Each structure stands twice: as C-alpha cells, then as structure tokens.
Length: 505
Image (tube, rainbow, N blue to C red):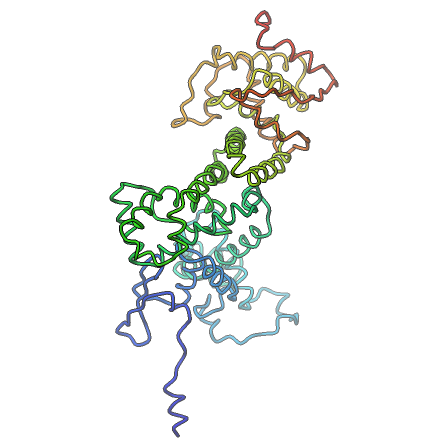
C-alpha cells in the first residue's frame, strides 16, 4: 500500500533544461514563468520545447558546450510529431508500417501518414522562410484551398505552430549541419589560429571573459570601470569555434577594456579570485600579444563580414587580403618569429588559391579605388588581364583597342570618367551605369570580369603580395604573362596604351 502511494506521489519528472532558467510558479499547477540565466530573456509561461530551442539557436551568452548539447537535442526531434503535432488526429494515430505498399497508394488518399505530413510541412516551412512569405498566409482560406487541391489529405499547421516550434526545430537541424561543415572545414582564420601562440592568447582571453561573466561582483565592477572611463563597445566576448568572427571579437574586447580591467585589479584586488586572471591583467606582454593578434584578425573578420553582404565585390576582398598581408608584415619578427613565419605560410597557402590578376583588375575598376597605391608596373597587368578576358569572350581587335583607350581615360580621370564616387549614395555598378560614353566596353568588361571569377587556376609566388603597395621599397618583377595570340596580339595592343604614351590619345 505504501509503495502505491509513493508511485502516485510521483509524476512526470521536470525537464533538465530548467536548470538553465530561473522559474517562478504560476497559478496553474506544474507551470512556471522562465528567465534565462545567461541572457535574461523572459517567458510568461515557459515550455521545455521553447527553452531548449532558445539555448540551441537564440541565446548569445550561453557557453558553446551547452549550445551544442541542446542543438543536438532539438535537431534530433522527430519533426512535427512531438507533443504539439501537425494535426489533431496525429496524437492518437498509431505507428504504421510504411514499408508495405497498399492499394490505396495508387489513388488519391484522404488521409496521410504522419511522416508524409511532416515532410510536406518541412518543405512548406522552408518555402515560407526563403521566399519571405508571412506565416499568417498559412491560415488564409484561399491558401488552404490551394493546399487541399494539391494534397486533399494534408491539414496545414497553424501560423503559431509553424512560426514557433516547427521553425525552431528546423533551424536547429540546419545549425547542426552548419556546425559539422564548419568543424570539418579549413580556412585562413583556422590556419592562423593553429599556432600555439594564437591558441594560448585566445585561451587566456576566454579565461578572463569567463571569470567576469560568472562573477556578479567582478562583472559589475568591470562595467562600472568601463562606464567611468567612457569605454564603449560592450562587455567581454568569448570565442566560439563555430563562429569565425568571434576570434577577433574576443581579442578586441580584451584589448579595448584593458584600462578598465587594470582599474578593477588596482582598486578591488580581492574581488578577482582567479590567480590566472590576475596574472594576465598585470602582464603588459600579454596585452601586447593580444593587440598584435587583434591586428591580424581584424581584416579577416572584416572580409568575412563583407562576404555576407549582397554588395560585396572582388575589389573589397582584394583590399582585405592586402590589409591582412600588411598586418602580418608588421608583426615584430624578433619577439614573434615563429608566429610571424606561421602567418606568412598560412597566408601564402591561401593566396595561391586566388588569381591576383583578376583581383587587381577588380580593384582598378572600382571607382572608389581606381588602383590607388599600386605601382606603375601593375598597369601592364591590368590592361593585359582586361584584354585577355575581352578576347576570351569574343571581342574583336577594334573593340579591344577601344576598351584599352577607355581604360586609360578612366585611369587619368578624363571625361566622362571624372565623376566622383560617393560610397554612401551609390554602388560601383550604379556609378558605371551613370557614365555616358559612346561605347560601353568598360561596363561590359566589368560584367565579364565578375562572371569570370571562378576560373582561377594560376600558380603564383604568393610572397609577392607584400610588394603590391608603392610604400614598400623592395623591388618586384612582374610575373610573365601568357598572352593569347589567336585572332590578334594582346601584348601589341597593350603596349600602345602605356601611361607614358600620350601620343596614342
């Protein structure tokens, strides 16, 4: 009898996810409001599904370990068949053996198996998200009629279910795949961070960030010191291996808050209970290393951010590659000799995947740059590359001659190419469309150059990238350019339009 009472006093155990939330009991038994202990987001009535999805997809301050765990939990759910199902009838429907083909499959079914409903809903959800369709459309009677005409047995979910739990599950599933791709990938950021110097510096920055995030007193003292010193930009950031830009954000936050960290240690040494954190804050060498690593990571972070923009072009990427090379070049070769050589090797490895001629041409054709800073000998590379692309796309000798003449007028800022470029108001393409010339060869060249970016098989001496800027005093010989002779001689044409041949115009 006593054993039966113990069993009856039990009930369903509470989900483990509640450990990460502050909960307050509601009037209805067994229900709670929830507040995330990491980012303080609040739910008037929290449910385990919502809270797990929050930790997996939305919380910016949760640790990578916890995020990865709940990303796996949410992505492993049977889509559309847990708790709140797609249709009311799904709750009571028993699992069927779907391997056996039935005669009803050869006619239009009036009911669908739950797996098929989930498959249709997943496709519907992706269409809504990718096409920017409002979720409220799912309850429009005309849209429901359309779905019934296509699949009579399909009962669509409500907009609340579609935009809530189902969206969270699909987002987690996609994020899980993205994490796997990122962990298995290789890129310039990870190449540079493979050195022990970079690893140790990032690890130390993470220790500092972790301490001040976990310590309420320390976090408050740091925030007060930053406010007093008028340091802007937010709090300390932690590195996440699946977010490449977080490397820069981590080192930059420590570098930016150096004065505030030193102030906290000076005024409240007993509140910093970690000996390692105290050691780092006292070390000028540590902050020097953080600053140098930040300088190297900044152009990489900018390049990643640029690539996410719809208006990014080859010239923007070229600029960031050159800035990265310059940052690596400025590393103190004596104090950081091994790391310096490691960065050069990593950069040269990635640079070998690019065709620099295309990037230099794109840099020239960008009206905001116009090849500013390049040495005079690069004019030959620019004109030869443009003429080669023109010839490969079927341009004849006469039109190629006009193209090179226009390029020279553009370089010398002669009419109609003397217009200023405003980055705030226009894009490179809108600037080119505003140019009124008798022939539109340069505009066509811009299109051809953009469409030809994937054809890059050339092997180059990647160490020569440091010689692109005129500020470098070292000599650099041009690469031997292979010139196509089919139809007409490109080298003969380009020699007519050297910048010292004023008589050609």
